Structures are given as C-alpha cells and as structure tokens.
Image (cartoon, rainbow, N blue to C red; front, side, top):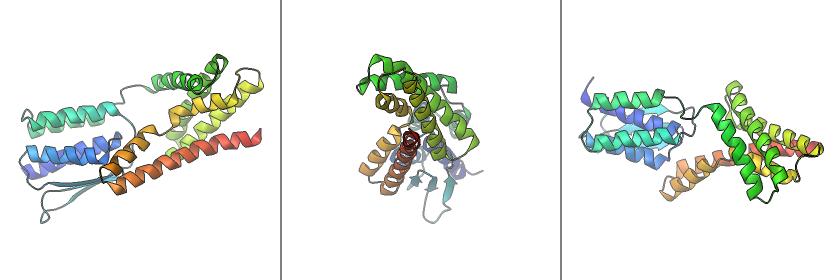
Length: 247
C-alpha cells in the first residue's frame, strides 16, 4: 500500500467517525484536509454531506467515496478524533499509529449505556416540565412519560431501521402515559407533562448543526440537516396528535 493510499484511508476514516457521530460537515472537511496537509499531501480536496464523503488529492488522481448510512450523536468520539488530528498536526503520530487509534475510536461503544440515557431522559423531562410552567405534581409523571418514550424510541429503532418511525412510536408512548396519569388524577397539566417529556426526542443538535453549516456556506449539508430535523419534529408532533385525537 502506497503512502498516498494510506493517508487517504486515514482521512476517510476520520471523516467517517465524525459524520457518524453527528459532527458538522465543515468541521469534517477541515479535519480531513488538516490531516492530509500534515502528512505532506498538497491540494487535498474533501467534500462531506450528511450521507457521504468524497476525498481526492489531485483532480488527475482517483477520487475516494464512502457512504454514511447510520448516524448518531456521540460528542466524545468527535473530541477523540480532534485530539488525534491535533497530534498528527504537531508531528507526534505516524500514519500507522494514527490509523490504529482511529480504528479503536470507531469500534468503541457509546460512552453512556442505554439504561443511563433513559434515566437521564427521565430527569430532563421532569426538569423541562417545571421550566415550562408546570408544577411539582407534574414532575414525576413527566419523568416517567419521558423515560418510557425514550426507551420506546430506542427499542423501536432496533426493530425498524427508520429513525422517524422510532421517534413517532416514542412520542405515541409519551402521549399514552401522560393521558393515563392525568385521567387517574396524577399530575396537574397534560400540556406541561407532554412538552417536558418530548424534549429528549427534540433534534436540538441537528438544528444547531444545520444553522452552523448554512452559516459556513455548506448549503447542501445545511438544508439536508434542516429537513432531517423538520421530519423528526413532524414525527414527534404526529405521535402526540394521534393520542390527543383519541381523547
């Protein structure tokens, strides 16, 4: 394997990890270009969208392409790739060492297990219910509704590899649990419980990345992420509307 091919594979792997972990596309391209430049590759060109990466060194050379199918949010992996990139830029890592480190990052499991994410979703839901004007009787129902909906979303995501359907099922479960609490005399406000419980499903990172990509001039990536966030918001709203319609 030539040195140029090794560097191209290294850049593609770094970009793949960052895109799969939810990084902005302009940050992905910048990291890939900096790694290539640090190893002496001139005129490196990278182009990233939420679903794919292109990388080439010269227009007379081959262009590398990689499709990104599954995406999640893992800021820890993004930080680890940035750390490797900075070490490469300062000349502290050889190509083989950097590739091994990136492979370890790529195969590492999410920092927090699912049970801990569900507990965090419970406290987030209860806190948002209070912040949006709810009273303390709404706190526990919002915690249970939020954790149930988040667990339902994770479980549905395993069965159906379409995230929007999983988010729709999660929001339906939130609506069912919230209505059951109110109809049995627990909680004071159905609206506040539902609003707090859906907050862990809201695509805040997608909206932020869409705006940052648009401001950086990456119009295709920014618009596609914005549409993805809009579809997620529609799935959440549709799930709640289905339950409200049956009341």
